[in-house]
Amino acid sequence: MKSSAVLLVNCPDQKGVVARIADFIYRHNGNILFADEHGDAELNLFLMRIEFDSTDLDFPLTDFSRHFDPVAREMRMNYQIADMSYRPRLIILVSKYDHCLVDLLYRHQSGELKCEIPLIISNHEDNRPVADFYRLPYVTVAVTKDSKSQAEQQILKLLAERNPDFIVLARYMQILSNEFVEQYPYRIINIHHSFLPAFIGARPYHQAFARGVKLIGATSHYVTDVLDDGPIIEQDVVRISHRDTIEKLIEKGRDLEKVVLSRAVRWHIENRVLIYGNKTVVFH
Image 1 (cartoon, rainbow, N blue to C red):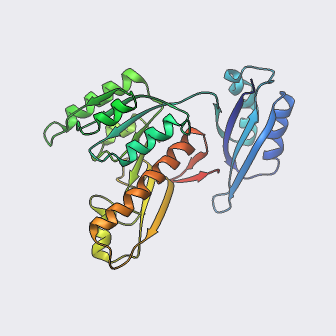
Image 2: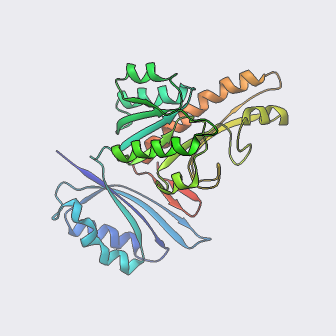
Image 3: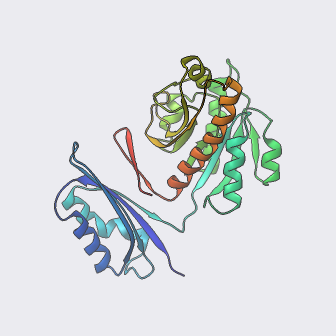
């Protein structure tokens, strides 16, 4: 069977970067399948995603760093290498709303999201029937104002036992502590029900309705220690009118939320997202 790998690179923009990478892959018997690049002139930064056939490499992919490090040092590169046959482990956190969870699980079952889901964690029992339908483990960790810290510790223990590669907040209606987020840097993906940076925090549809906006949106982003301020992976919008009630805004918004979140999760799984600063480049 053919196998492929993805190399994500960022480094100072300079002559010869693409040539050095292509030559390295060629000399070691790889074959480039797809290549995409972006230059940030303001930061003098070069970013690239290369997917290559690794079937006939003359070294195991696990030894890639040992062979590629001299090139990386010469070109002052930061890089990541990923085996595309690997199915990352995803744990989902969810509260009562089911639309994002159902969409993720359907896409997972259909093969669109090539990952493993060892556990779903919730602070409510409401979505257990959904997990049961897809035959996935579901654990409830109740959260109250007075038990938030203990609940987080219990969730962190569950995560440590199952060793996820990343976590998705599928409308998990709790703010995670900085201590929690720091244990999974740029490995927690959230869906926020507004077009960030507009209407951060709670009840964004109510804020949008009060402001009389003509577009509402949804934003999927990596979670950082600043609320709703992490690097954005995907966004989308839908037009609304003065006739739309808050209930109609919420209905339209939920359609956006599930699609935007699933796109972001898929691109993360496929190693299409490169973070730099508080921004991302998404190589489609």
